[in-house]
Length: 105
Image 1 (cartoon, rainbow, N blue to C red):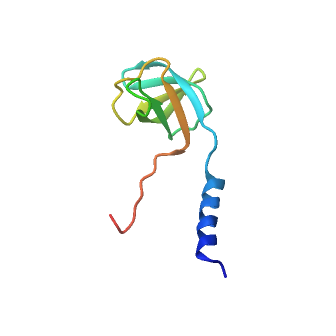
Image 2: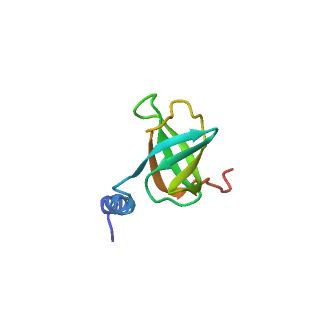
Image 3: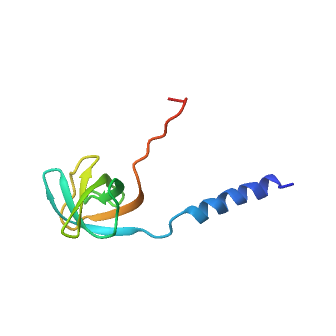
């Protein structure tokens, strides 16, 4: 029988095994209207990315990959574009936007 302590350790070890220890990054090359263009990592349509603003170290705008053009990634923001410009850092998550659903709603 497993003790409570062993169970807790197993839970955290499993979480560490599933965690990504690296980050796929790119850079914003231009923005036209609400569409941003980025050079960077290989991503998929619908993937969630975060673009760092120049307003602070921890300020990011969530964006969705909506297309590709000339080896560039096209992104649509899911928030305010203020503080984003050419050279802004883009981080890919490897997953799409997810919303929890259930009886609690």
